[in-house]
Length: 202
Image (cartoon, rainbow, N blue to C red; front, side, top):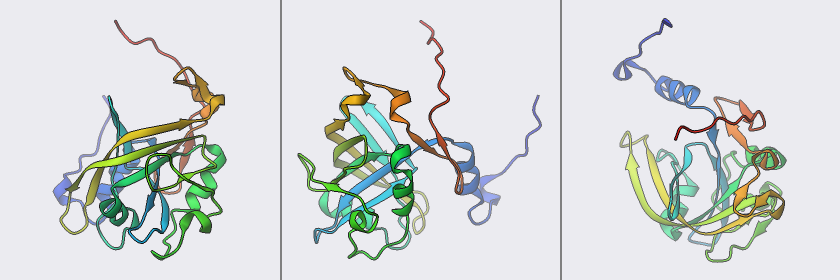
């Protein structure tokens, strides 16, 4: 049996709990979230506290922090819509650049050299350079964790899904061609290219 070190969460200090959680739950998909401020300023920022949580209808969550100024959270509270822009190898550098802290009045699409493509059914734009984008409407925002330094869980339902034809066989997405990027800990990412199949039990 493997020898393990035990951590009592109440005894952890500073960001130790965060470091353990994000170091163990890997790789995490990246939600590159496009929003629009109440004043109409486009914003795009990556979140690795992100996932799909339901298929009918397709429903997604991401979890921005509530401490300090968080444009994405303010925007989804004000406008109630967001885009998900799938992060693949081709856009990973721009995704990383968009993680910088920009003033609220800065158009982050423009600042990061991205093409802001108008969505079909919602107001926030999509990242034109991505192979796939999802338009979502917010259905619920739930405050979780520490009252001052916790997160908000943003829940959104898809209303439009845009996928490059080169990725598709019907509605099945070619995983090798997608070349998705996953987030690990600190500055570490991974490529979803070492793929294998295993048959699910009946």
